[in-house]
Amino acid sequence: MRERYDDRSGRARGMTRRRVLGIGGALGVMAATGLSASAALARRPSITGAELRSAVPLPPPFQVPLPIPSVLKPVSTSGGADRYEITQREARAEILPGVRTPLWTYEGTFPGPTIESRRGRPITVSHRNELPVPTAVHLHGGRTPAASDGYPTDLVLPEGWQEHSMHMGHGSGHGMHDPRAVVTELTRDYTFPLDQRPTLLWYHDHRMDFTAPAIWRGLAGLHIIRDDAEDSLGLPAGRRELPLMIADRAFAADGGLDYPSLDPTLRERPGVRGPYLAGVLGDVILVNGAPWPVHEVDAARYRLRILNASNARHYELEAVTDDGRRLDLVQIGADQGLLAAPVTHRLLPIAPAERYDVIIDFSGVPVGSRVRVVNRLGSGRTRDVMAFRVARNATDDSRIPRTLSNDLPTWRRADAVRLRDFSFRAGRMGGDHGWLIGGLPFDPARSDVTARLGDVEVWRLVADVHHPVHLHLVGFRVLSRGGRPPLPHDAGLKDTVSLRPGEGVEIITRFDGYRGRYLFHCHNAEHEDMGMMANLEIV
Image (tube, rainbow, N blue to C red; front, side, top):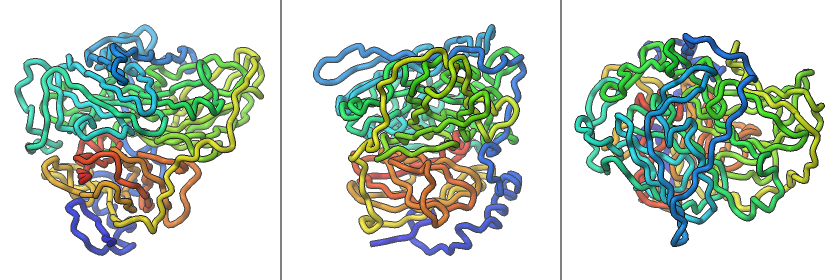
């Protein structure tokens, strides 16, 4: 059975190519919401949003050492499972040299502590909420039972919280009731079976309507899954494996993080000021919480585990030596783990929430010289990301195997039992600006898509501006872009794909793992907060 869908109510209906891809329709929607026509036609994803300018002096690039997030130790390892405890609390940290910045944190640090785990060994993370607002924790990329997936209304309330515990609203202020919400006070246990391929995941706040400002204030951390097969490949490891969380921010005159919230307390009114409806961009590029950092390396191969944790900024990364030579970025993994074989890039585009696992070889770079990582989509200060300084010669017994993995799924179009179409576009939401899927804003009480456990489906996605689309629970493969083969950076198993304006993208996935209520949504966090989410029921 094959059906065509273009909205989230599940009504089957046809859609012409002109209607799906017509820029004129996109311009009409953008005009109706007050967003500029130029944004609808934008091909440069870095401008999907507006940039805040910091009101404090900014340091020169490549002066601050790259921090490496600490690895969290379990409080218990008994019974074949590991148990962790994390407190969500306010803290101050020196992000810009000499400036103390208030943050919302996991365990007092930004990024939060990294969790390292083994494939198939379950863990439980007990989160305690000592922040002034409710929270919900999502392990992005995790194959997670629905009760622990961090659904946006499954909140952990701070002690004594009374108002709005069950009623949520988008920017228009209209309330919504979710009869299925599971709300706890002060603490909640999240259980992750981790029966999935080794990869880099990340955890972040997912509270309905307030995800963007919560992540901006610091609620994000890394989670790495490992297994014996990957360990045996001989890839760079130890201090030559670097997690890199890239995120842009802006700083207010008092040293705090600037963000254009309509309600800076994040208690009642969600949303951002008008100029930032398409996304919030900062003018400071942070890597692991440090501005434009530098890291000393050996003249050897390094494995870079890269996450774009920005709310809305896209990057196109390039590694350039001081004499202008570009180094290869050899991709070995995507969002959901290792590729079948390496793919070599000179430029690597990365959308919000995407992860890339790459090898860079510094052995041909003279000791004492520098390699800059630059963002080809940036301008001014946002063109720089970080730098590596080659400090010494060293032996290197690492390698990049020609075959990395043989356990990637082999789904074919012929296996799909259903074909669905989804549009990601601006629109009206309760009389206000919004971002919609299939013409509808998110409603936790509405069932949007129902899929049977074990079914293979093909989804066709189209967008007005750049939208990084994320599916919870499952990974997927990109089948095509604009009717042509996928691009080199689309390789492997992904859970987030960057949609470009007017360009249809086809993905294929199998809905396996667990039954229950999940989500798919745009991971431009401002779009997500303004309605661009949908319910996905696995039955």
